[in-house]
Image (tube, rainbow, N blue to C red; front, top):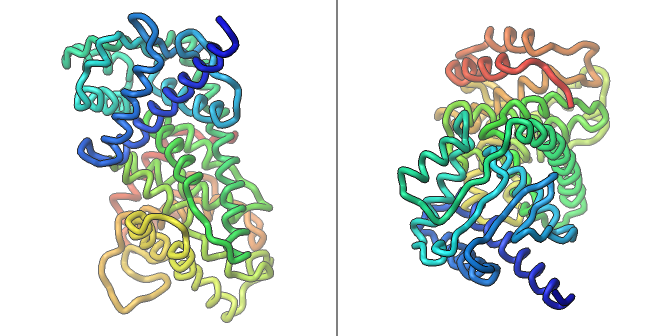
Length: 399
């Protein structure tokens, strides 16, 4: 094989991976008749035809490397990131890859999209690969074979997934710092990177919510504002998953948690880091941060439809279930579901985290007992019951 042919094959393999990855991410968010879904479905078929060689097309994971047609993807940064995310996606479904047969080229778009949707929801099941195999048999899908992980491979993959999840946490922390710095400097901020990170965290929650609960136990005394926002996002995603929210809603909820304290960029550092009690004037300033968060979200460079979906809960996250709390409004309607979820996640992480103004923190049992005393007043009783069940299911752990 000539060098030119190798480079051409590598380019086509990368293009195919990107097409498949984009299609999966799009199907998570949109219906089959959505224009983006149709566009990326068509792009996938085009990339598929270009990369096919002979009767089959193989996508295989070996030693945490991704191979297409037995050729390892090149180690370019952009390719490596997408490849690792795809490897994690497969690992959560206990898969080592696929073998596409050439009749996939004649498959209809609805059939392809049905396969992608089954692949996505498989992570919700105890044995995702076996469930997926059964579904493909029932649907008479013969143009794809699944490569199943062994138990040893799954355990190794789970360890790797934890490591990648921790790296995702660190990336989210860095991204939030950069966003805060950009806002303080008056620069416009987009959230494409945040959406990609949230996609990954939502995917971990589908079959490994324990990973996210473990990550949410991370405590960084010096960077509390950033770790707190990420932890609230993780806890909110897990609680949303526990009550049956869809992947699309979990993504939006995670973004709400991520930005719920964005308004604190407006607070003076001497207030944030003050060791003693706040004055009444300082407390009034702190109580404005939910309103400021809403105002900062309005400034973000994102689609107006998504902006409308993520703006309310950050404003509400210090309003109680009985409508006490802050900021007070003339409208006394019920707090939104996302707002009630953030209220629980925010409070729990706050009282289990070390702060400059207190000498001790609650452990998880003490925190839940304290919160249960305010069930029906500060917290939605049904959501709090689900949250208690979630936290108690996983022993306290750190990464």
